Amino acid sequence: MLGLIGMVKGAPPPPNAPTPPNLPAPPPPPMPQKTKAKSAAVKDPKFEKDLVTGLISLVLLAITASAKEPLYGYQIAKRMEGPQQAISLKQGTIYPVLRTMEKSGLLKSEIKASESGPPRKYYLITEAGRKKLSLWKSTWEQTRIFVDGILGVA
Image (cartoon, rainbow, N blue to C red; front, top):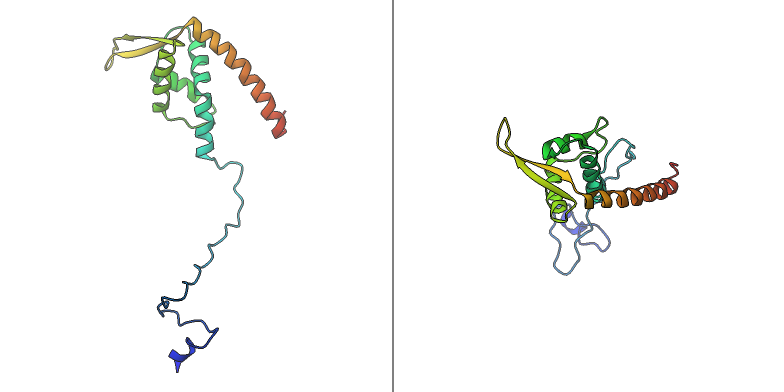
């Protein structure tokens, strides 16, 4: 008698009954809904990465411009960390940008022997890099003011 219940029109099939080929499969059960809202302290890695990618050249030029002597990659990366470490940045992220900036004439480099380990590539900002930094700083300031205004931070 139990087998006939599933055949009554409108009655659900037994839980383990195969779906007949001429009927559509039942919809999947609903996904559980998250009830807790994300707190402001939770980071969004993708947004952070996109933001850093857009700003890294500006930051690299600013660091090399403020340095009293040429810096190698690790030193630059350490200066990027800063005391707050508000943005996570993998050290390997800066090297392709440094190379691109060197090819563009914004930085120049020289390889020097190291007292510990292999020789290091030291970076120094060029005059073209200083001019570009001035332009980018102005653009950044205008952008920051605009975004702060929209976000109500100003």
